[in-house]
Image (cartoon, helix red, strand yellow):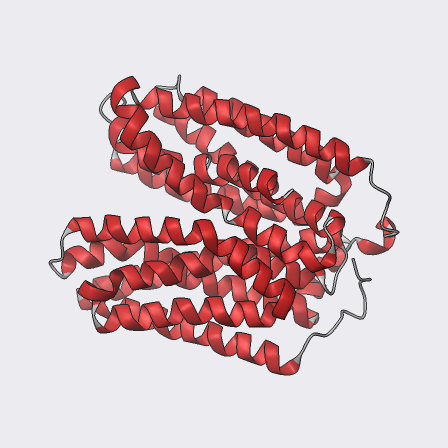
Length: 395
């Protein structure tokens, strides 16, 4: 289950969200993609991801997660093949926007299915391993650029991604058939769903849901500006461009193994312990980076990889302790929205600071402070202990 859903993350996020960024320098050699096109793609895909997450939270429970998982897989695969044939910037923008919305819905369906079907003692391991599939997608994108695209052209990158998508859809279909034959867990669907009219009240009024959304907001606030401005900051300091490449390689390699390790930690020692460990790695990496960027960039990349990729699975597993699988999917959808809002605010603040001071030094100090706040938040969760929601039944 974890491996197949991790493959879904490779297709939906690794390829659907990030392959274009890897291939765009080569695509611009044969397609007229100017800076305005790239800016529009960046903005619209982010908005589409938020819209997909919001839509999933509001009506996803009515559509059936197994059907949605297969539909998004088939849809993403078809769009990946389509990208290899497109030359019009407008159609490319539209296709990437649809891929982003599909990616958000895909992850939400994975959260619901794993929360419903996995054993409680393995749930976070499965979820965090699946969420780390995005890191494997990073790695595969790099291999495509290094080994395939120079020989066969950028179109081959999208085509191979589509072939992998077809294989993953077949494996997912086989897995879901097997899961449907398992006995029901006794969950009453009517009681387990949070009505759309009460979803916002649940987020604002219940401890676990509120803290989960706050964590995602702070993670977005720190990670998105960190990644978007990293190479610019290294250039400002006069450091070699290769250092940025090595840092992102470290991020990807670390993320590939972090999901399994931290997921097991969450299942065995508790979710608050796992959150404390990954947030501490990220905060320490940023502290070291702000002190000595030249020598600690790889350490920052290690902390980023340890935290970002498995965080989604650990957090979903923690939510699932207090809510049904369907409600967990709904809350996770809103968590993705708050993540995007945090990232938008972080990027806007970083741009303002860069414009006002002419430097990015203060930006990374702010990001470090926010990362330390995440550590204190995990400590507070650990000290106060788990509390089950009084409204929603346990999964």
